[in-house]
Length: 299
Image (cartoon, rainbow, N blue to C red; front, top):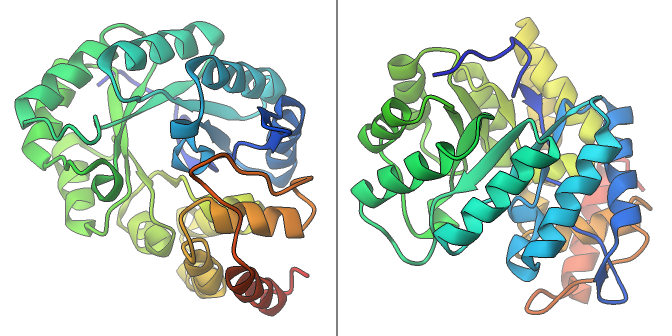
């Protein structure tokens, strides 16, 4: 693996939601969200991750969001651009664009729906990573992509692509985290992709979190990370427990429906607009989310 700076790809990197206004992507609000995370102490942001609804965006919109985030961050926090898409050609286009635009790294989801064999995954990631000279992370989310990556497949990719430096791991498999860190060393960046597993994965040696709930309470996610890194595990457990209900609330409906509702309720988003086939929260879900926010002391 290529060497990374000690702080590179570590910490809380919230996956930004994509705001809409009158059917169009609201780039002004998006830039303000980046600024908000910088002020909250987030170590970086992720553009067009699952929470950013890339499947409802055009390639041009995804490129514009990447450029907006990079400009708004202005080097004050890391910008990781999720560039995986439904075809190899589109993934290459988005990946090379992100690198040219100044992204710190790219996050590439496993090709979804098609369910390729392991050898196809190795060839795919090797090819994509070989087209850029910035760090590349595998996005492992079998619940959405319908394809998983085992340790041997991951090792084959790491061996073939020197700039493949880590993964976002969005599955309840703590064993793979330990396998990866033992096999590739502690410099291999594992980012937590499931909110409820943030504390345990960090305790095992994960390098950071890409947590949707950081769109609601970014400062608390930063505090959780810093507590584990500093070895104050009692404080980390306390934060983990305080975040527990919020973490679950994110999935009261398909992500990011609950997240966008809560952000709008707290005034972080100016409106709660969605694109089909996504929909706003139902009245029942909204009531449940209001109760969670109230118990969290956020209303």
